[in-house]
Length: 240
Image (cartoon, rainbow, N blue to C red; front, side):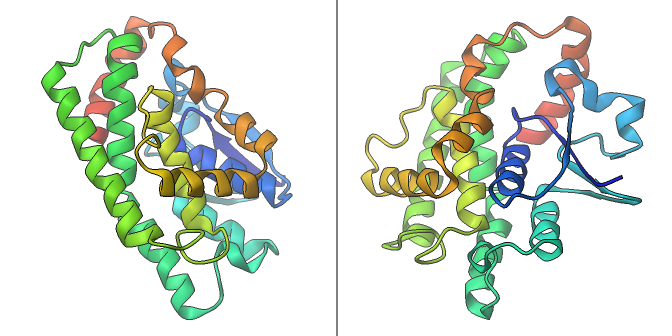
């Protein structure tokens, strides 16, 4: 059997993997794992990833988890353009720098914004206090400033003149607060211009396709009570 990707496009890491594979014409079988239905918690999926998280990759008998590891595996297995993960030592190090930083910084704060504004109150029926929401959005704003000052600076893309894995991971992270109604680009024209460049490089049809699910987050129905009981502790552990 060929390459299989286990994804739910509600998930930011899954969207990054999906866009990268589609943009680079990497052949794969899409295996949908619906998070809000608890499909990742099934015994069958635990055979793919014992941690019961998406994304996951199967390449014949080889199984791989963690989105960054999957992205790097795809860059090495397939002939993709060099700009995604440059061979030049220092340019590659800059991509690695962002991919290491984002886990507990931009990704975490973007995820918290989505869950505190939409997912907890609408999907799980768990209201979030105005004080917690205010703190969440303030922390997100500080992280956006770091993204601009430390990574984007005055460059076209996060690493230099060309799009890289860093940009793809970042733009998919930022779609979480965008989908929750946070107007993160209004006071950040530099970041807004960067986001438009990234979307143009990805291609608008593919970008819109990958984000169709998350952009409907405000209209998600309430989760089934039995699924909610399983999801809530996992989400709390993930976003703190």
